[in-house]
Length: 113
Length: 115
Image (cartoon, rainbow over all chains, first blue to last red; front, side):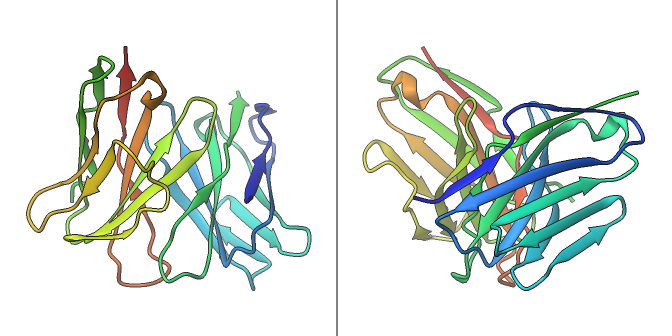
């Protein structure tokens, strides 16, 4: 069955450092991979989307890579800030004509001042 | 422009009762998705609806769960005869349906607790 793995342990880093979160998947060939941010008690908020034929995508302090050979995506936040503290979810979608998203369990990021 | 709205935000039901969760999509959006998030688990797709049509309900439990998105009014996720295992956060998302890469915008969720 499809499986998406994200680090279940929280990632603690200091303000100003680069945070790197990992998303690995098996038994799936996604056409698109997305990253969402989720704060406690709230719904996920879309951050970035990357296609299977793209290696890297950037948006301000965010960078996503997508390696379909390794079946892995890396999500980077540079110059991290305490306000970046949240849970980050990766989600995969196939090429079915609509986005039926398959989510990972998320990794909690804690940025301390 | 209001975002996706869900109500109630918190719902408490006793075993055997019915739970009705409502979702109003963003203005101009005609596609609605429901997801369930169990404690310590990722969001799981339940159902995808367009106005008056269920497009994909492959993630819905076969019994007790139903969803609708009428021509007028919000989308409704209905859970009959709730059990403790139904306790979870239920999220609704909407999209415009104009492109294959539609962004899904999520609501704040309804947290269902079954006593």
